[in-house]
Amino acid sequence: MAGERSHGTEACRRVDDGITRVFQLLGKRWTGPIVAVLTPGPAYFVDLRRAIPGISERMLSDRLTELAAAGLVVREVDEGPPLRVSYRLTEAGAALEPAFAELGRWAKRYLVGWEPGGGC
Image 1 (cartoon, helix red, strand yellow):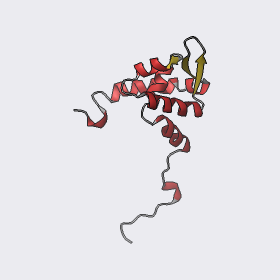
Image 2 (cartoon, one colour):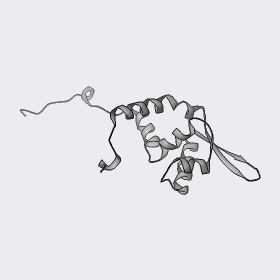
Image 3 (cartoon, helix red, strand yellow):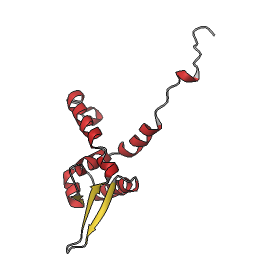
Image 4 (tube, helix red, strand yellow):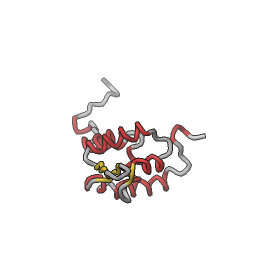
């Protein structure tokens, strides 16, 4: 048929499996800010909650559980008294710091004035 183009398999584009896995985990709401808050060092649950406005305790707990299951965060219990729970990045989690720093620089340069949902 005239006008139709045949594409070989080399012309098909597919997203890299690694990128897919990264965004399935880090692309979830709140996950990036949690990792960013933990980048400088460990933080208690209550401090994480204060550092991330709008996140509920349940959502913070769920995201920390997912990050721990992915091997990016470790939960540590200080028996106290009082009993306190802190979280820190693992070696794998800390290795995200250069990528997060670069994303922050990129956002400051290219997302100036942009707000999620179109902004008003």
